[in-house]
Image (tube, rainbow over all chains, first blue to last red; front, side, top):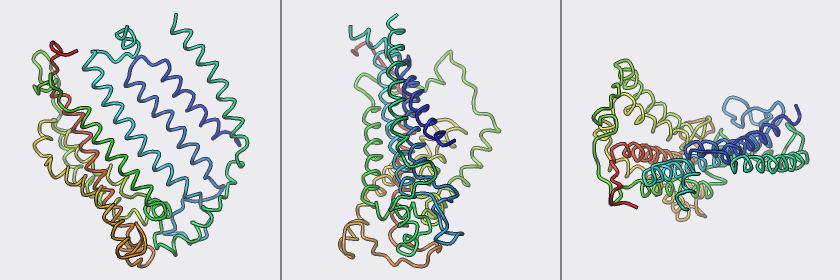
Length: 114
Length: 254
């Protein structure tokens, strides 16, 4: 239990990277990158977690109630936004690559280059 | 063959990296016990200092507001980048959408999808505005609410077809929303410089914690970010959907 969140982080990172390395389709590759990135969300939230802590929102609980770390939550928000923009840009590149070469297979691009 | 070698090489390297990561993580504070100085301080003082009951919002849009401005411009730059990458090329022209090509039969959206989709547009937009407006009180804010607002446009697409969306989407309004949102953040920051003491200074009256109009500049910044994100995501969506209208002519191309 103690290392479970860390193992989940490493697992997400590893399977995402495995997908990128063995991918034969650019869209699949972008999705795998999103999986790699989701490992960073888990890591950030793991670091900030406090046993028994609630969300750092003091609307209906008084200030002083044990709460998890709000700083890493703000960082995770940044992380999600950057992830979405990176995916959008890479998908646009994939659309152009498909239009130019008629394929989404990165192996075939290598063949095209000679 | 090369593929197999590649895969084997990766598995060996990844096993090494995983062991290294695990070794590093073993040195982190035990799971659930971390109590960083900043987190304790902010959880104890942010509500009285900024009158925002959502501490994450007061970090994102006040204490760390300058970083979030950069983050907003990352999004802005990405939307501009996608628009440039997907602009019509010299050797392309707009044609029929792929679904309407001769010989291709795509079923139209059923009446049930159409009715539920259109019925949900209103509630989704209201919910998006709610999430933006209550960002300083409860979980949510400009980024989350902006994305919810943009799904309203997606619902129009789902329940009709893209050509209909193109007619109802006032392009100049969307562009204006995106630019106003991005520029508004900077303007609020500069106002802090003029009225208050520093760039992005929280110069508005703070009000009572828990009230809708409280926590000073966090609310207008949330609205600016919400406008920018909603505009940006609708633009992203339409740039990709526009691609179904583009017929590429590769004869003269590379």
